[in-house]
Image (cartoon, rainbow, N blue to C red; front, top):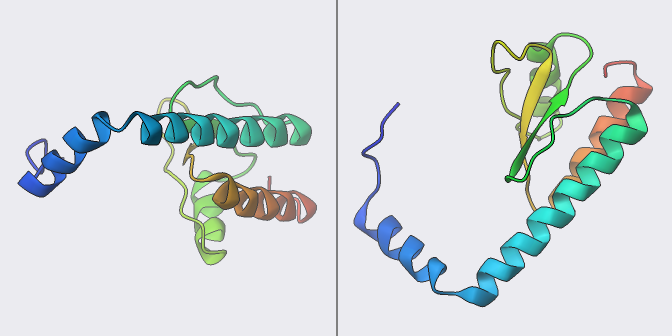
Length: 116
């Protein structure tokens, strides 16, 4: 893992973003909306998740996590890996509400097939 991979363009962009209060408010609002959508769906499906205030959430996967990751990728969705020792959970980075709606649709399809 590299900790020195920031380039000048990226650093300038980050600094500009920090001064853009409207963008920051929009990002916070949409991230919170996406997290709420995912939490509601996971609760509806009876899948446990770890509480989060970040832009990601760890959620339970019934079955093999590697298979789950591969199946999500086959549906055009990239989800995170398992983080031992938290086995049986996957890390999901929150996207826009529209992106999360697609994830939810696929997750519910997986439930119909008995995969989660």
